[in-house]
Length: 272
Image 1: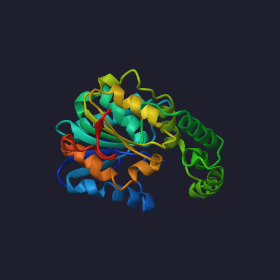
Image 2: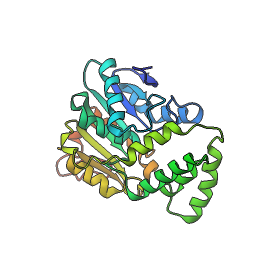
Image 3: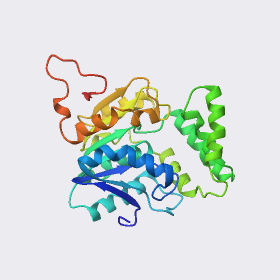
Image 4: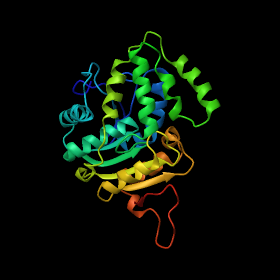
């Protein structure tokens, strides 16, 4: 535990704190653990990667600022100075709040599949998830809306997501985090973020639409945006370019991306 927070670590070098969303306030297990470690493996060649999760049993009225404060205290306790951070989806919402509220704790920040607030479809899906959980129903089928725009695809996916939920699983921790994100809107605070920031976004993200990603980058001083054409929410951080683009920025080589007279490729960071 890191100051009461569950975490996984791998690699060697300076710390890289990774924030992700998981349904349970615990280290992932099984297939989820395998896919998480597979995603962060390229980063372990340069950093000691800490995949840090929230503590279990947070109060139901927890806000995004409360969550950010929990992580901030863990960073202060575990590390000697500001850290680099990689944050994805809802983890990105937490990281944005943390970087705004505790600017001295984050050096370089890479965000993926996230924005300064949820889009309309993301809000609808998460509220439906919360309501299903409160009714004692398996909640994950509510998320089909933000995975695909296909009516047939959504119908099939609802069945798969229903099967993925355990009938006896406690969803209270997930509901707490999703409620916090429902009230999250950092549009008026983005200028408080001092960390060098890169946001990587798919232009078909249904949870955090591209216009909100652009708004996020425009509000953070000197932030950069990379857009992956045709990529969905999860397709952004599973794209084969993701690790190399993120590492180029984290290792401070992004400023040299795209030599003079050569237009940068779509996966290279460019000023917003």
